[in-house]
Image 1 (spheres, one colour):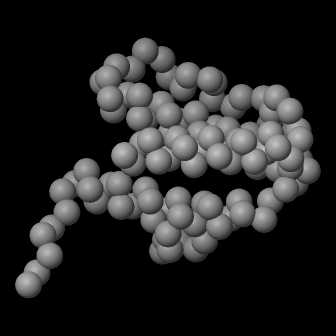
Image 2: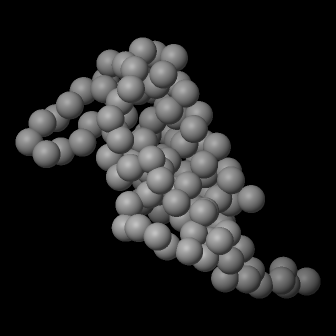
Length: 113
């Protein structure tokens, strides 16, 4: 018996989950790439207008939340997400880094729910 084809929404959710924590075609998942990064490495600032790992995690979290918000309410008030496009690192502790990762996970799960 042939499985039912996925709806477009289900296919998008499948792809988001694959890139985040599955086995995407392009290499390691986002979760795998971040698994062994500690707070010191994440907080490193490459300078010259580039963004380090921690700020990229906060950026991805804020945009994931923004996509979910826009999907739910259909409004688009601004070009930047709530919380900012490239928010600063508030606390460079290991606990704060783990919280940043957890907040990205939570935002991803909320989007895919």
